[in-house]
Amino acid sequence: MVGRDSLSTSKTKKSSLVSSVGLVSTATAFSRILGLVREQVMAYFFGAGMATDAFITAFRIPNLLRDMFAEGALSSAFIPVFKEKMVNQSDEEAFSLARTVVTAILVVVGGIVLLGIIATPAIIFLSAKGFAADPAKFELTVSLTRLMFVYLLLVSLSAMVMGMLNSFGRFGIPAVSPAMFNLGMILSVLGLHSYFDIPVYALAVGVLVGGVGQLAIQLPQLWRIGFRFRPQFNLLDESFKRVVRLFGPMIAGMSAGRVNILLNTLLASFLMEGSISYLSYSYRLMHFPLGVFAVALGTVALPNASEAVARGDMKELGRTFHRAFGLNMFLVLPSAVFLWLLGRDLVDLIYQWGAFSETDAANTARALTHYSYGLIGFAAVRVTVPFFYALKDSMLPMKISIVSVVVNMLLYFPLIKLWDFAGLAAATSIAGILNFSLLLYYLPSRRIPVRYGLLFLSVTRIGVAAVFAVLAAELVPINLVSHQSEVAGRVIALGAKLGMAAFFYLLLCFVFRVEEFRLVWGRLLNRGTGR
Image (tube, rainbow, N blue to C red; front, side, top):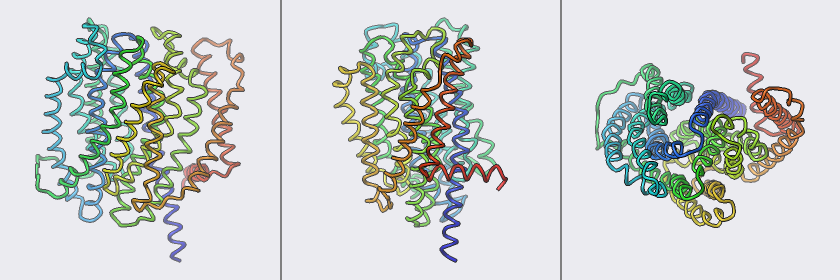
């Protein structure tokens, strides 16, 4: 009877994981689609020239700090401690911790914003030194950065709200909230670009409008779960100290990882005109499946893993890892193969309009080829790291991240000589794969049971299915859609290839008895029958 109950519980948790990931992935996909529309709007109005390079570089500074302080280290340090207080004490005790952290954000992040605005010229000089040779480009970048620094405070508060809602099992609205950010940017460009002497300022205004929307859409649900904010800054609270202790190494680890992005910008600023834009546009395409699948899985995995740790159930923690990792590979591997083999078709469809030339498309596709295999490593890291954080171990991921950055730096110059700006993407991808490999190797040392043979078999089956499926998609005769308009022709051609790839992939996963396929398919059947 106990064995049957355990099996039933395991199946229920598998189903719950798939349902939660499905909800977050759907909401994230909507947001990412708007993100691609945002990129199309940018490409159409601004192309890949000086103004776009200036905006991308300017936004990279507050966005980098956002990744570290807000959606990265802050939420990862906060959720395990917050969830532990929910499980072992009460919701009100957890809310008390949240009030202290929010107050600290207002004080600390507000101070960082002010310092950042003052120090912007020095920051831009260090992060994009090549711009100093063009005073107009340098001044535009400084001005845009100062305008967008306030976004850091908005998104930090938004990430805190998201962490609380996720801990209560509320995943939908937090996942769709980034759509408000993208919508704010799109509407700002469409409505305001003609009002500025330098139209790219409309993008910077859109960042602030979107940041307000991203926070505001979550506040009603925060009220419903019972949270009420009042300033509370209890530095002596032991739970707050634990968040801070976790936060430090996480900041260092994530800072090390984000150094890759700054180094890419710095080195690309010395390369051919448009290099920063090519890397950015290709990274955005790679980041679509990363956000829809891997980030969604990481978002759901952290509170689930934190609950298992709070209850002392290490076997369940191991099962949760295998479910999350397997589902991650099932979704991400075919995406990586698709970007690798059909990336140019995707770039042409998404970007090659207006001021975005065929040369821009070819160069963006070159960078995308090298980001495609990195997607596997980036995605695996997103799913693996939360399990270390759930165990309140932030030191080892930090050390591994630093090692990957060092390797990245060693690879830069030989790969730039080999592939020019695309070598930057290749170095980053190789470092990402190394990062994941080391994390996976050290998981058992943290008492997380890992069945390496099972993981290898699963990844091999999924990988073979993905490669053959995408190769089969190349059989779609493009000339059948040549009579269509240019827009319709591109959409139909790529849609036909994507549809054929998906069909063959699912068929091969069925033939190869891929566990994740059966899990997802079973969940879809249950939903269809109302169970």
